Length: 489
Image 1 (tube, rainbow, N blue to C red):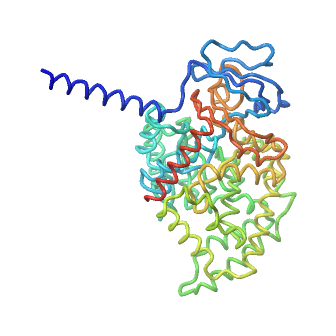
Image 2: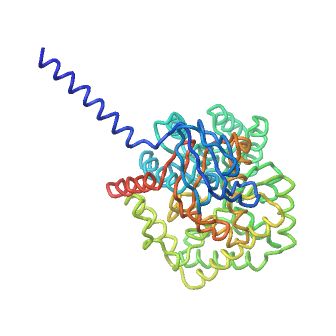
Image 3: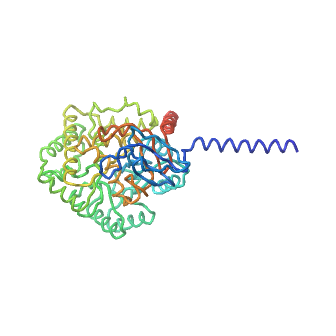
C-alpha cells in the first residue's frame, strides 16, 4: 500500500513539474494588459498621440485614450510605456514559410525570427497547401507561436516551371482545373508565375474572377505589366515587368528576352547578351510611359510588392552587400546557409565591374520607380521573399522598410505598407492593421521613434501577438532557441 501511494505521489509530482514547465515556456496571457504613458503611432496616418494608454482584453484592443482619462482594469498587467512608442504589428506580404526546408526546418527557425521581429501577419506566396493549412491550424489553436497566415498554395506556371511546388498550366482546361482545385482547398489567393503563356494566363484570370478569388504574383515574361493590370492581377511582386513596361522599347526588349539562347553559347556570350539587354532597358526608360503605366495600376487597383530587399541583396547583388559577415546568420541553419552560398556563388560567377555598375543602376532605377508609383497613389505593400538567399526572415522586413524610405516614402508611409495597407489588401482592415478599439491585439512596443528614424523599428521592447505579451526576455529566448536550432541543423 505504501509503495502504491509513493508511486501515485511521484506521478502527481511529475505532472505538476510538467505543468510548471509548460507555464514557464508559454507567453504570458493575463486577464488584461495596459500599456500606459506610451506614444501611440496608430497606423492611420494621424500624428502620434503622446501619453496615451492602450488596454488589451481577450485578444482585442479594448480601449485607447489619454492616460489621464483611462481606468486600468483590475488584474491587468501594467507596462510602463513612458518614453516608448507603440505601433501596429507588422506584416510581411511576400514570404515562403516552407521555402528553406521541408518542412520542419522552416517552421522552427522562420517563425521564431518573425515573431521576435514584431511580424504578426504573413502572406505565404508559394508552398504546399497541406503544410500551410496544418501550420495555420497549429498557430490558431495556440499549439505553436507564430503570425497569422494567409497563403496561395503552389504556383501556376508554364512548362518547365520556375520553382516547386508548381502546377503546370498550358491550356484553358488546365487553368480552370487548377484554379478550381486550389479554391476548393481553401487558398486565399492564386499565384501566377513567370513562364505562363498568354492563353493559360488569361484563362486563370477569368476562372479566378468567376470563383471570386484574387490572383497575384509575377507578371509572366510573355505578358505586359499593363495587360496584367487590365486582366485583374491584384498584386505584382518584385516589380516583375514594371521596368520593362516603362521602356520605349518594351516590345523589342520582350522579344529579345523570349528568344531561346543559341546552342553551344558559352557563359561569356550569355553574360554579354544580358549586359546589352540591361543597358538598353536602362537607357530607354521613359517617364511619360511610366506615368501611363502607373495610372493604369491606380485605376485598376493593382497593388505592388516591390521586395526591394530581395532586389538589393540577391537579384542585383554587388560585392559590398555580401552577406557572410552578417552576425544574424547565426540564426539560419547551416544547410540553408550553404544553399544560399551556392546560389550566390553561381550568380557571381563570371561577373565583372561592368555588371556591378549595371546592378547599382538597376537598384537606383527601381527605387526611383517605387517613389514615382507612390507619388501617383499606387498602393504599396512591404514584403521580402524570405527565406530567399541572404534575405533573413523577420530581419528582412525592417530592411525593406528602410529601403522604402530610401526610395522616397516617408517613414509613416513605409510603416503603413506593413500595417494598414496590408490589412486593407487582405480585406482585414476592420479587424487589424491599426491601433483602434475592437481590433486584433497585434502590437509592437519600440524603444525609439520610427518616424524620426525608420531603423528604430528594430529597437523592439516587446510584442503583443494576438493578445499575448512577449517581453524582451521572451523575444531574446526565442532568438536563443533559433540560434540553438541553427547550430544543430
